[in-house]
Length: 291
Length: 271
Image: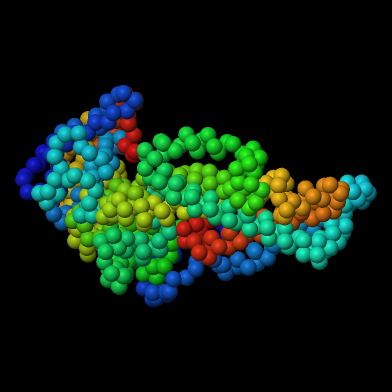
């Protein structure tokens, strides 16, 4: 992004000041989106990514060939065949659906809880003082350590998985939201006050938009944590999901299927992050032009 | 020291002390000053003399320790839109708002309708020479242009006085010069009272009707006021300009030396 963005020069300012004929009251444009010349840069970046990915597959193939024990280390072709088989039976789709459903609902619930809590903590000193010790205590307890407890409390159904995902989401988003509020430059708040904003207006029109980039960053990190947690949760007690696929394949030494699940997780994580970035750029681009 | 009653902005025997790590530091002592309606007043002083502290108190961001502050007869108790502030840092702009929306901010807070806001903001965007850049975001504009937005934003809100805290200090020399010329033009068109804080003698003579020169801190106060009787726009190469420069230089020199020689441990002027 930074390579393509042109820094306006003082000369352009001079021009702007003198020539009053330039572009009239133009309709709001999405300036944070594609700029001229960005296409070539993006294509090149895409080519590099593709080459890197290809290299990984080749290295994997060569490595697997050298080891030459399929049960230990299948080749990409073996894994691809297994993936096709799992898709033909509909098993893979079902597992992906189950895992993503748990991830997204836990993530959504966690975020919905974390953002208001973070905003309250960031703005109100007493609330922060009260909740801070809880946050600092619980955020170092990994969701993995709660897997068994979650089973005992919420059973082996969906609730326990959603709870674990929510747990691993909530602290990351809260802490980032607070960080966003705390890092708002004092002059910004002072400017708003001297322009006549009331405390409530300050919150709505300054504090909230200024902390959006931090909240979004927190959400992206939290999504990564959600992926980490889901597998562990599904390994212990589940009848579906990618974690279940890994765990059940283990019993029959179906290494191919384990690889399919692992690669699928990687792809899903990548796509989810891309989707989030796209959503941010289209819905909240003005609040986070550099995300 | 002039203290004729009826000054628009009155600063009377104002002192300000800070408490930091158990030690008391007196930034200002018994400062008295008045700014007349419609004038361009420059407050000139060596760094660390508490210029920004004065501005923060006038803006209502910080309380005074003793004395009295008033604008148009009414005491100053906190931030208010009648005292517009232009900051040195462009962090003061709202990065998620376009140039036009930044300028509209104060009007929006007052509950003005969208169409009215647009109209007023567009006029002030024009006044500061940013027409054609209305829909750009601050990060897409140069440092000089960002300060222009700040000027427009403050003026669009129609304050009684504009407080400027070294607004051009972080610009490069060429841009700063141009912005000073622009400010003189904008000020003469907008007809607002301005209190402008600077450490730059050149800048104060270029801009000010009167220049108040501060003593060095701690315990800073007003040392002398110089009336600048030069037609605008002023040229640095004008003999009259040079005379004023020499006079200001003579007054401020001792203070700069004092501020350099003063025992360390004093508080920096920017918070």
